[in-house]
Image 1 (cartoon, rainbow, N blue to C red):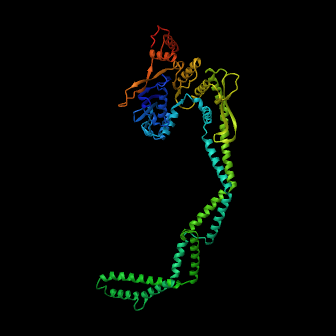
Image 2 (image 1 turned 90 degrees about the vertical axis):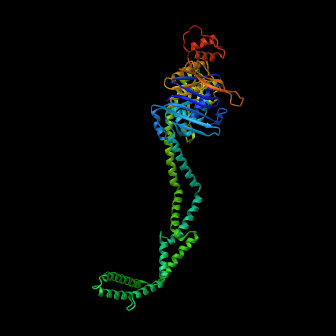
Length: 566
């Protein structure tokens, strides 16, 4: 997953720049203000850092930065899950643009991506150590993160159990605080439920009551109608049955003459049968029909109770059953919320789950702390801090926290015989930088990022220590791609590749009259690299002495003196 190319368009003082990178250890050098750290800023922007329209080159409408990495099969699953195309065996391209209104757009392999997705992928691709890396060592989250990464543990399960415990505790506390109001609410619901329980309304009862009441209240009219219909069918002289039978007999008497009468007779015969069935049904209805004043009174009374409760609770009568059921559910929920025993058991269970996770994480931290301290202490010895000691202090917290049961701090003794103190209280800026570098070198092997970037982390060191810094980075470059922005010739001389960042005048912006400055990057080899190392050693005027020293640092044979560059 080595970084192959960085492309910048209209970024700060860069109009257009394409930088090709190689494996191993690469340094970027140049005069102050030439734009060495601008390249790191652009790379971070491509990998999801905050978009700032102030980074757009003066006179341009938007900036455009991209970074190409070697593709890695280990990222295919992440890319596929995010809906991005995978390019097995090819390049992985991250791109970002920002316009003057601050609008930002990002892409991964040509597909739109959010800044968060760029950041997440960027964390898998490279690891950047800034020149003020020591400042993060005073922040508890950074200290804890370093130790946990070294221990190879993650606190996701601990965080989930902490949240579950907090929620259970909050539910218990809320129930305890609300007991009086909960009890009042329970009493109100119980009274209302008791009132409606006297009625015990059935789900479809109101419709049935209304239908029954309508029938009984109109019973006499129904009886009269049934009797009238029966008479119209069965009356001896004028009834429908008599008339139908006479018509049928007449047709049947002549059907031997007119064949069509036979079919008509069959229709009349069917009508006679249906009329007889209707008369039979009416007889049955009349035998059981009754005005039933007692039943009517019962229905009046029950419907009156329905109406009274419906008016009291401002609901249509047909909604009473649902209202009754809802109150019962609310009462059950209140009973559960006021069940302190159950809530206390739930809170205790959640606490035990958290403590189990926290103790397991604490054991991993306890085991990793001396190993991390030893590794950083060893790195310090080669950085001019002989006899210095690094410690990882774990102390029990007074109360459990989201991140565990222990407080984690970094202590350091700058030289033999001194007492380790919190890293934030170390007075020497040079010591702080060297400690940060020792930690960076020690922890840079963590994680999956194959590209490591050191942005002037060697600030405050020099001499033999600077050479050691260069050798450490060179050693890291054997396993991973290492890029370092440096001002130390000792570090630059250890690099496998050397890039020079310089400024040059640019064409004036049309009509502005303002001279423009641009950054450019060029690869240095042979004499050009000798000259740059010599400049770093002695300043802008390169003498034969500094040039010879530069060649010596680069391990070149002592040859005829090269011509110094004025």
